[in-house]
Length: 371
Image 1 (cartoon, rainbow, N blue to C red):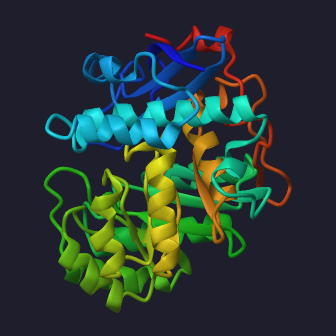
Image 2: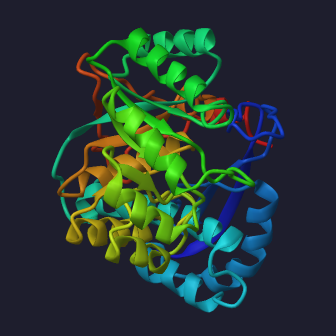
């Protein structure tokens, strides 16, 4: 089974606000699907957390290396692409493109074998997992409304992120957390994402440590991106002193970039994003390194139905996995598949067990969002 074509599909019209200070429009081109096609008609779908123009540019570089390659050896092919473009990629848009291609090749491999990707990744440790609804912070009244809506959609865990948390003063930050806990009660798990990867993040370890102490009083599950994403030494210090588990890793690409964070125990929770860090292949390597260092892995998933499906397959194949991120509400996640994801009464998602990623893109629905 040979690779004969790759279709690049930028998504627009339903892009969710990412919390950046420059603002947001639904027409922003932020997520891109790739469909890898084979000579026997089998297709695989992948997702890239990168704009379509960058994926088109990366494909000009990658296609000569892919054309005619076998479609059922995802790990070897994606590593070939990575190694062969080392001087032009090594992270960034090229690695983001490889990520989507790798996911698509795993989808093809699963379909060719008649097995879910999770089984090909090593086997199924679980058949369902708890999603946490991922939302942005807001003013207290608006935040309470968002939280109520999210609980109403069945979520038993919710992560709040970015503005205005950490952008005014400590008193206001605590008001937001107090409002959240009062709104959802004690039975809903809450996570907090400060959004330290925002440009010109002003806070250091002392702010993060004191904020973590406040969060601990409200039984927050973890504190994410409390520092800029390159502050390895700061994260090491913070993780050793924080009363709340510390999480980061969403902006890192390639398994080698994760190694110092794991080896030096700079985090309690590492968060690889398979739609940008190299795909399911790299995420599996990272997840096993994390397991070997007794660090929890929770996939970062600010993405699409395809990204969520990949995260679910990885979560099924890891010995320890407690959550997956579920961006909500999000048209690219909730309005692209033939069968929508459903949260059960206990707040869990069933992990698809059909061949490949276990989902089918509805091509009529996709027409609404393809650029």
